Image (cartoon, rainbow, N blue to C red; front, side, top):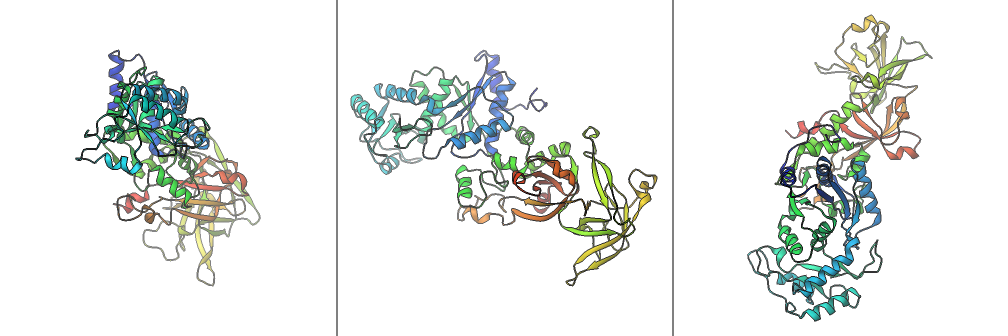
Length: 558
């Protein structure tokens, strides 16, 4: 059984693995998760993580975490550390930590092998000439004038490229395959480019760096990967993956299998675009709770289990699709409903005075931390003469089916007693500032009079004991389902101006002060909230709304 104690869900990749094991093709499987350390992982990467690590765990195999660190211009050790933190937070541990840079010498030697066998050459055309000579779909490419250089000349030029004798872009090592191929990736693809940039692991040792397609498959082979599972955009790369391995003395030949990416609506999943949002200040950072990054979701309060459950239930398909973000929200809502301790919070407070409650006195009521889990215990809820309730829970002139507090009306205070509105006070602008009520002591929860029924129940917090908190009300980052759909408009035009609203005078129960960053609560009748890391350096709690109690967007978009 897997870590979430639910039966595995069958899919076409899992069936391939089962067939390979049952046929004896493999004794055990080996997978890998190969991110580039040039940014933070997002929710789409989590699908690949769950798939690769989950398959290996189910069938007693191994999974390597391998950093595809072949582009030193954009990569850093900080990003690598963030990726490792994300993988571990999701609940997975790799068998070995590897880097494509571990294999730079072997990759270089394999390139020499291709040159010696007449299957690679140094092209001295500039980038524009190389690009135009490749042709297009339906238009054959044109062979480079340098394609038939001698083996000796190619070896000499390639070594001098490595030694740093040429400027960036002056030469390129390409595979000699077929410039007439219908697959553009097979038209003499680049293997190495000159890039005289220090690498965060190898320093100044290399002046040339391998292209992704060259490094990826050979790294798989070196590590003994059996199933190289990648997303659907690499399907057209598979013939090249196989060609490279067929034309070098590779230690093994992994099988590449492609699956559909995981896309969500109301967001973008491009690492480049996410970087733009960060660098241009549209969000506070990679871990901004509005971002679809794993770091952002974690900070917002999403649980690792909810993300694993989401991708398990979404399944593995061969065709791309866009999943409603409400499905992801339901996953965390279901998890938190089962596990979140309860508390009360008032986000838009108005004062209630219980005119018949003894002045200067207070008491502590008991309420369950979770109504369905008595093992979680009880919390102490302070009660006094003055209370805060939600402004929206009182109306001076309510509609017919308004079952909250109104002049002459009764409601039950959650976990307490019934109160009746006898008067209210307005300020000079006509805004209600105080509501005067009488409470029925015989209706207290736990007493025989508690059986008396009223139609409305509202939440509340003691004025004397409540804590002022900052609550960050997060919503969807974009206000259209597909920000990239309109090719004539910039996706940033669709940023939701209300993706973050800050409530700086919310009032919460004292029990919230016992929490630490990352702890979450269900604020009864309000939603699920998580203590933000900023609370550690604040004199008051700072909470993020993780998700509402219900999917309010579902009604809006029907």
